[in-house]
Image: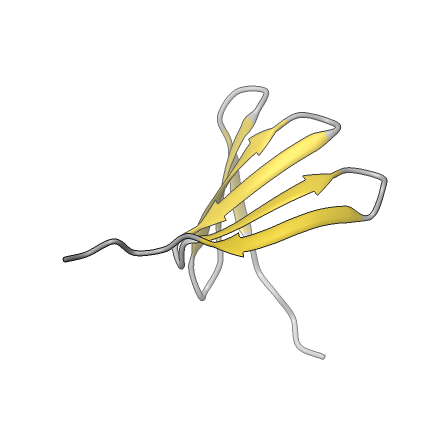
Length: 63
């Protein structure tokens, strides 16, 4: 298992920007519910402490 390096910047109480070697993401939410959107258009919603999460990929509507 390799090492991971993540740079996180907290902007206020409910917004965090994360940067890794492979991409970036934005997390919005508080203590109980968090929603993360990354640069690959993947969305993850998590109920903290319950083990429940929902993942989806946003569709690209280019014509």
